[in-house]
Length: 234
Image (cartoon, rainbow, N blue to C red):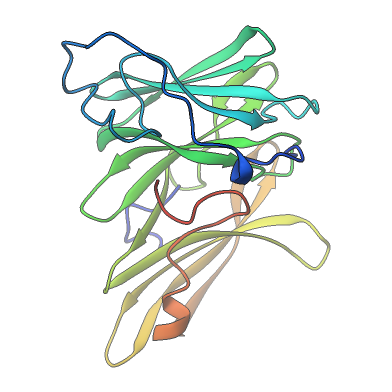
């Protein structure tokens, strides 16, 4: 797998998302929409009613805590809502044709702009996970796309490893490295690593190289490698 071969992926306060308590499920009446509420057993999954996921995040970067809620609006729409104080600051509908699990993955600073980005699992294959990243820009919630497609993809199987790592270059500038490799003969894996830079409000490809990895190195590729985000889905 190279990054083109796959369905390629996709300032916090002292109380970071990693240390926040489990999300609070908003009590709702039993819904007739069984397909929308099918994942209600997962406390991080959206239902047909708004469900609070985090109260320990600074989405807009102003130094105060914001609230994050999600709901599974329909079979192919997952909605994200951010509250600031007592007001609803913004909502964003995320569209997907990949099953729409609508699961809150987490939130963390990803790009160089102040504030946390919100990661939502909006697609799930047999093992491939598609994430939609939502961020706060100019007073509203917007989709933060990968340089290749709207969503970001991670994967981990005995034959495929794909992941995203947040790092910094020699000048201290934030970069994302997206690596995808497949198992070859013996214990060698081959594929491609792309480096993304954040320029003019979006991620762009700044470098690309072929990689050959051992089993041990490949096993560390899959998933998200961003502080405060779980490596894989909740």
